[in-house]
Length: 255
Length: 304
Image: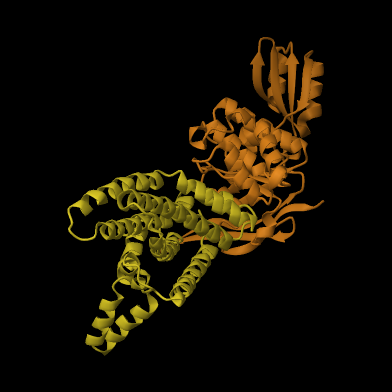
């Protein structure tokens, strides 16, 4: 357990001391401020526009962090040879993967926390009251990013190119948000292609399941079981992906 | 005596497409507790590959290895091991102190014990004053010293060093060798690879010569040096008669004003001494000629 904590805290320090982490926060702050200008140009409800743009920005910046850091952390340890220092200690390889992933989650969590604070602050200034109901959306954004990050970690355990890992992870993110299209195509396609497309919709996580932004902005109820279901759905995928990542790491050699 | 390292038929074949490279071939070796074992060979001989197999960073294609009796594939075998890789690169966003704390936790330390160990190691390797500085601002020599400190975290009984003095300036090299000497005096087992033979001569008890993946020879440095059977004899006032007679039995190696040194084979020793006595020469010094490691190394790989 101590080795997981060590790797977790090392990863958290790495992430929070990276230029990417602070760059995202500074850039996001500028964009949050610009949402106020955009909302001025609209006739619709300004609070909802800021909330909508704000949540989209949080989601987008979180995705950048999850993809880049997720595909980079283990990859960089391998490239630099730092992983050899860790594995030369009595550390099981699955614990290394777990520590790295948990550290990554903490970085993404910290990132979301600061971005949320910015959004709530902008809304407080603009609307004049706190909009805590938006936090429900943050829960699903965090779970979705956790899932995406685990995919990034998975690719970083065997890919030699971080760029390629990032692109494939992003590709899977897009597919995960396009399963409805795949399902429709499967229904219209021939037997073989239809079977193939249908199989893909069963394998890939349905990321639209995480998109509750509209309901949250309009403060509509989601049902209590939704939060538990999406948590279990995410955990199922994450545990499975990390299991395969650990299996790959277990077999991998470092020259 | 307890054995720190044992390998049996350790072999590593790298495969790249259809090409196969045999990096280490059928390596069988034993290193006893308390030994300083120098693992020498030219670049590409398979030294680092062997070390990485001992630590399960690489897996052998065949053969096995044990560390203090435990299978090297088990993480438990590394509980008493410290490792310094060749050209180490650490987390450069951490300070020296933070990095050692990180490694200490990996070694199973925590709380006050960890803090004490971090401080004592920083002092031991002489970089306590730079403990707050980020590793990216450390010089190569300082990186090597923090590398040694991390290898010593957890007070390991076996310390494995891969080319510990490679690329260091003379001062950095001296500091590193002094640290290894002090570890040797504390009874630690040290297994180190290098292609710098002088370092091995200075600190090792036993040596293994690896060449093209094959372990050609394992020997005790003292015994091998003594075992040449040659004597080095320095003579003063050697006249022409003496020189002519002596050169039939021995090989002159050095001349210095009126002194001349001969290398004499053991079986010619008494005849040679007789000549010197009869021809009025004066023996200034006589000692068994020590073979240096370079001679042993070249002779061994020449046969290999």
